[in-house]
Image 1 (cartoon, one colour):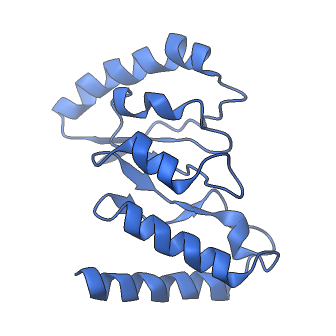
Image 2: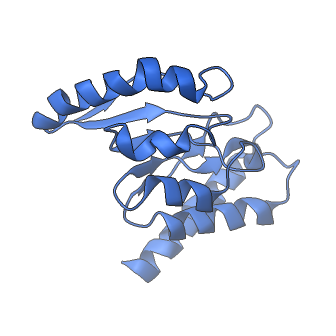
Image 3: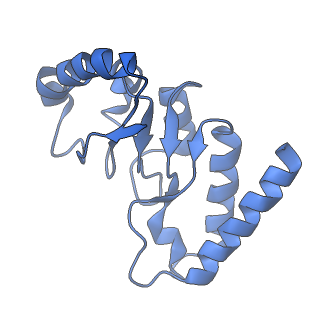
Length: 155
């Protein structure tokens, strides 16, 4: 069973000082209790999260949803991978604006490929954060094809 804390963390609204004071102790306390019951715990972090990433491994989270990479957010996929390490799942991972024709399809393909490579074995692939109003469904289909290709090579 998965438990999403239902929050929406962004470092411009919740800076590290407030995270340390109010959020981190609660995540740790709840993590101790809920992990004993076998629950998978995750939180929603999007927008600007670079300043919060150092807390990922000490927050008793099993996954973090919607971390939005560049060009939409303020972090690279490599920075996210380093912060999460091999044990924390990335839930989503492709920035939503790349589903718009404003950006070349190759940018979407490059990001989808890179997120699958970096987070293989600890990824629930999805759109970070919301599918844009001008997004193209064909781009979702293309990512689906890429997932099939990736899985066929990596079994």
